[in-house]
Length: 345
Ligand code: ARG
Image 1 (cartoon, rainbow, N blue to C red):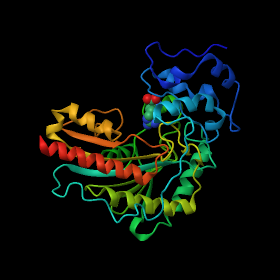
Image 2: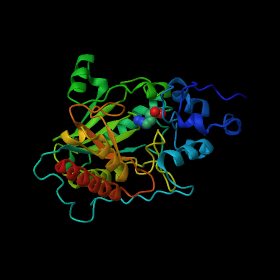
Image 3: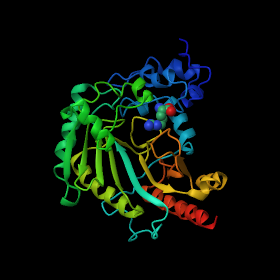
């Protein structure tokens, strides 16, 4: 039983940790829904530039394949051997009234966005879900959003109802999400796209739910302001309501269970788009600050895009073993320090 051959240049975590002994032990196994190690590592095998290279096909993948997933989780999330995740989300969000205004002059922060990933415990995850269940997920979300309170109420757009040109138009206006990238494609996440995919959006577009993208739900709160705690608190209110309707896959150790092991724990990415004209030319200072506050820098086009015109996407790196409100507070402290540095240059 030879380990499948990863590309010689691949530095994916899955390649680093999949020893012959682990491969031998795990390759004959299946989760009760029939997900295998072979399916889990397809994306890493087909994409030599993968950083991680493995996806979970269902909640039980995390226990059945823990011998490969645990070392990857330790390495990526920089947690000790005995990690656990206790979420501290409730409907009120942050218990202190709010965080100090970050950018009262509106000089730097263009927008704030907080998202969490969730999967319904009853169904396989997107790379392994049956088309019938994918439609079931969409219909459960469709029913759940009807019960949102007035403040968050809105409408659900099913991509099935869009012609290709309408879809293009919605993509341009960011009212739809595109078919996943080649990493998701190799994992099987794009199967049948755009079938059973859709977006719920509140009337003011500040609260959204992406349905059947990389995870069953990506719940997003955002707005064009620097009000990080306001955005977070709205997410908490929305999540609180949804949790009474939907049962999310959760584990005491791993937290909320997601397709990609990078997202487990809080499954939360909180970030801002921020214009830093001076730090753009002093990247060393910015990188030192982001490392100190455990933040990551991306381009504003999303994952694996580069920074353009001095506008950075800065978000939390830690997700597992840290309560959600602390993620927000750390991000807030880091952004305050970054803005200070930008002003002083
Ligand atoms: N599977 C890709 C890789 O290994 C992406 C990992 C993180 N991103 C994500 N959207 N889950 O590089």
